[in-house]
Image (cartoon, rainbow, N blue to C red; front, side, top):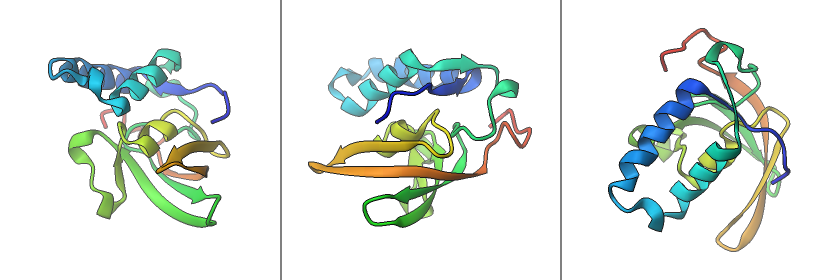
Amino acid sequence: MDARTIYITEYDVSRLEDLLELAKEFNYRDREDLKKLEEELSVAKIVDSQEIPPNIVTMNSKFRLRDLNTDKEMVLTLVFPKDANVEEGKISAVSPIGTATLGYSVGDTIEWNIRSAAKKFKIEEILYQPEAAGDFHL
């Protein structure tokens, strides 16, 4: 993954940190997905919900992602773990692809290993971002 600024809203950080605090009660240190999310939050630039650029993937954003290895597109919505449903394209923020896209912007290329194969994805378009739509409560 290229080094670039990750933007996350204060509201999203607060809710994700609450999730991590709850996970600590259940010995989350053994979970790589939660460790990765914690790392991402520690380096993110935190901004007010009303100041986040509209081209950033935030919680509950719906976006188009292109697999650069296969040139296939998928439409995903980034959600909290309790709302995840792969069949509906709702991916958890603690999943590898969820953590990798949170805070990144349109045009960013994301790279990570899936089952020992390097995969590259590009964020093509934000179809819905709660903050851009004025839905600051999502």
